[in-house]
Every structure is written in structure tokens, then in C-alpha cells.
Length: 130
Image 1 (cartoon, one colour):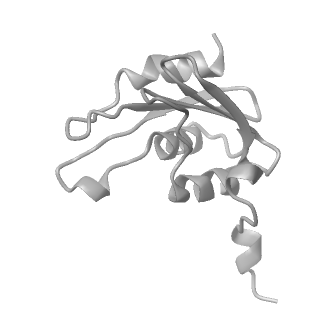
Image 2 (cartoon, one colour):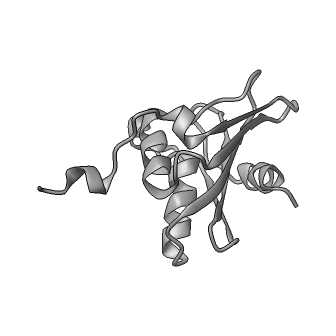
């Protein structure tokens, strides 16, 4: 099963009672394991969790630490990129050349990289004291 197929499968479990906008994400870690995430909304609307953040949390909980590939799918007219916060999270756990596939349930696809989504990203090494 492809990474985007995994994201589409898990997307059905998203919890989006307020917006109805379900998103699924799949991350392949450097070791090859796939970690999944969905968006989770709650009544404190801005306090929800993005699918990408959920997949990253699952990856870390499973003992993996580096992203090798990302796939995100939503039911939208065009592929929807990760929010700014998720772009930062993806950049922290994956390099700028890591491939990202953005897709829709209608078959539209866009291929990009973490670096293209967040040029000039910063990480822990940028915060070290000199």
C-alpha cells in the first residue's frame, strides 16, 4: 500500500465534528516504519491537533526520530499544504529534501519537499549558544 493510500485509509478516522474537514497523514520514518495521524478537533476549536502533528507524535512514541517521506490527504478541490506549525514540525524531524505528497480524494496530487514548504527553516541547532 502506498503512503498516500495509508493516509487516505486513516483519514476516515479523523475527528472533525465542527468543520467536517478530515485530514489524514502518513509518515515513513528513516527505518521504513509508517506512522499515521489524523486531525482531531474539539470544542476549543483552535486547540485541535493536525494530522501531521499526530503522525509525528506516533513516530516519536514508536521510537523513530527522523522522517524519510510524508503524505497528506484531504477532501478538497486542490491539495492542501500543512499549516505553518506543522511545516516547522516536519522540518525539525526531516531534512529539506524529504519528499512530501499532497493529495485530494478526487485524485489531484502535488509533489514537493519539506524545504520547499518551509524555506529557511530553523531547528534545535540554531538555538545553541555559541
